[in-house]
Amino acid sequence: MPRRPSFIIAGERIPLGQSRDVRLVISETYTGEKVHVPLRVIRAKKPGPTVFITAAIHGDEINGTGIIHDFLFGDLIELKRGTLILAPVVNVFGFESHERYLPDRRDLNRSFPGSAKGSLAGRIAHTLMTELVDRCDYGVDLHTAAIQRTNFPNIRADLNNPQARRLAEAFGCFMIVDGKGPIGSFRREATKRGCPTIILEAGEPWKVEPSVLQIGTQGIRNVLANLEMIDERPLKPPFLAKVRKTQWVRATVGGILKFHLSPGDFVEAGQALVTNYSIMGEEQYTLQAENNGIILGMTTMPAVKPGEPICNIATLTAKQLQRYRTKMERAKTDPHTQAFTDLATSMDVVDA
Ligand SMILES: [Zn+2]
Image (cartoon, rainbow, N blue to C red):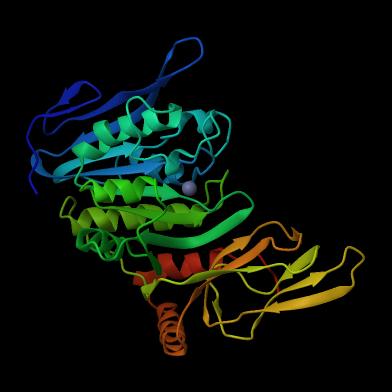
């Protein structure tokens, strides 16, 4: 999908073959200083698709910032066609205070498409839509789990949209969770506006985790290779599970948890997930999985009250479970899938 050769963003014209850092004004401070989202715009000599990679729309979710930094250092990719726009921090307000939200307590990722005369969040969302999304053909938005949780890396995308499906499959995670995304979320509204966008959900907030960097940088390279923007052989995971149903298992009484499984582990219906002990060490109950599946998300906080989430399981059929398990076992001896099998063993949060 060739784009026009002259390209203007944040008021700057960037010709083909040039790379430049620009600052997109999104708001102002109380003292009236401009607040910018920093962007690197990399243009190949040949025209081609324009792709954005964004991170920290939730200001405390900085694994994506780390992933983009790996590209900003310089020699990770050589773009042969098209334009790549890297935004290491979108919610610059939240990033400053290590918080998910904006100063008006709104969630930027529920405020899209926004409007020019709307709230603080709405105006920022509108600027991002008109200045960034409207210039792009595809997008990848990088997230982590919410506070006190971790996510086994997974892609979320609307698989009914053929181009979003293409990106999601190309990225090469073990898991794709199918769905349009919450109303007002960046990826939902960007996709609706004609810029198919997927998200990566990986790891914990407040951290840059090596295993997440590995999967995130590889996934972005896989997407760029699929769009023929770089010359590279994509690296595929041992299996690609597409799921629609995920379910949180919750604590029934207050206590301290001992985990029996980790994110990314396969689980069979009836298998023990966690045992809950009273503060004085008395065993209270053991939670079991209701369905077959893969552990997609988990709490990182072992102290729970009734109703608090413990683990999020992506449901699989018995046949899928068997098939993926076999593929995973085979992959352990295949050097081409090393990055993925490393990942599967690096998310361990338990010793039992
Ligand atoms: Zn997020």
